[in-house]
Amino acid sequence: MKIIIDADACPKKEETIALAKNYDLEVVLVASISHFSTKEVPSHVRQLWVERGSDQADFKIVGITLPYDIVITQDYGLASMLLPRGCRVLHHDGYEYTESIIQHLIDGRHLSAKQRRTSKRSRVKALHPFADQTQLDYEDLLETVIQESLAERKD
Image (cartoon, rainbow, N blue to C red; front, side):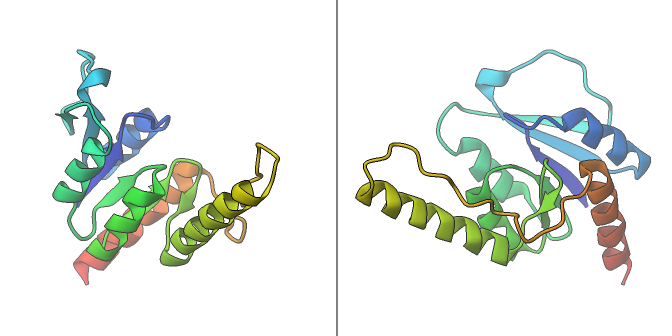
């Protein structure tokens, strides 16, 4: 089991790395080469750089994710590809992606596009995808998911 971070835009990398160390878990940072850094990372962290381009990091993440892994992303398209793989997918705002959340996001995108086509207003208020879910502190959610995933692996 490892934690994979869609690292180009994740503001919770440091918190995730610190918590993973407490559980002796590997962290994999996947980012575009355009975000390359020579910054030192802890020994339990591996950095994977992908070519510039739309969805390159997403394809790499899908390719390396296994059941029981935990993925951190704000990209619900990526989340929708990962859920069938038996992993857990979290948003850095403290939410866990589920099939119903993904469907809500897709429905909201469809309704917003439809409204933009029929309305002269340039801005359409988006539906909040996690409105029915309780938001948790990100670190509390991540720790809970780590503990549940480790327990499931033992069963």
